[in-house]
Image (tube, rainbow, N blue to C red; front, side, top):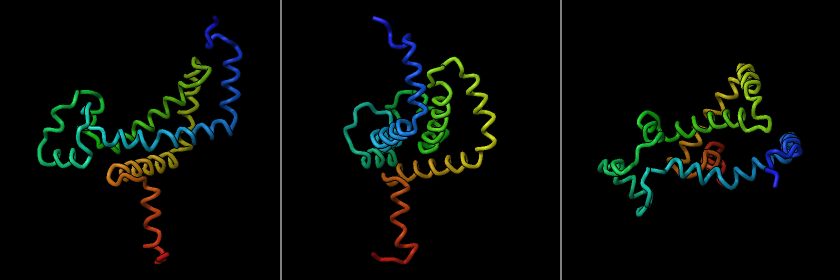
Length: 168
């Protein structure tokens, strides 16, 4: 049996799929629908304890009254960085750096990554302002999910009647 990676048509198929707007957009929408809210909330609420016997409210109350909730955590990169950054900041940094790395390395022509890196580096100056605004929007959304449990979009929609003076 020939491994899939060695078949010449696989690379061409992946390249043609990556250029199809419907496939790329549909995959993005499907993956966002299935994974984003759940995994974002899981990342924001995770405290390093393997077995959760209490709900989030009880854990947060214990964390406020005592520092016992942090003593059972295993040291890992998230716990170390959590000393310096909030969970919403970490989530936003991981999303942006992860997206950048995926864009550079997740490609059928893997070994052309230096070319993709240089193209990205050169294009950064053109996209600095949209990137800053997108970073800020993601950060605000992560704060809303962490504090309220709902996304910033829904939080903003709830304020529309207040800001416009409409009651219906």
